[in-house]
Image (tube, rainbow over all chains, first blue to last red; front, top):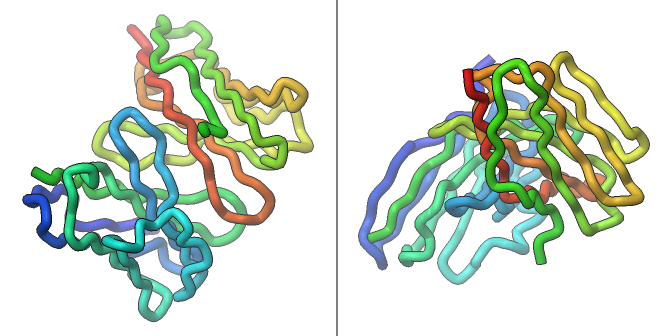
Length: 112
Length: 112
């Protein structure tokens, strides 16, 4: 069974530029999560989708961050414009039922 | 306010000995707890979990203990192996929110 796929794995951009991350969850997993992990910290939830509906986006900085999950499968997280403080690892996770979430390898974003 | 805390940033043990990783939480509404392991450049992988109605859960070399009155959980690894060297995150969930709150992580090094 394929795991959660994320791309790109690494991204370096200049501040004020836009950036997008893509996630393909495990097949059949209805719930999809985007997390941000800062250096030396644990992952922090940005947004959670149940199928195509964003059911928890309370931690998503809506002035510059946006996300979508068209057709309830793949998802894209966008930052526009990026700021220096956005440098982090962006993790995507998915789950079927219960509490166990399966994480992708993440995208390491560096904003210069 | 950090609801889940891992106060030890790092731990070093000898191969074959016991590793004990600790985690404290403040929210008494948390009812499910998980441990994740993370290798460099990979996403966190699920290790073991425990419901708040239990005080112990064992899976092979890994045992998680929950002390609800102290709001404390621990992960025991016996015997420790060099391949266990990784960052360990504890996480907690409240009800059926699907939202995991992670600690800061503890880096475990198992020396041969």
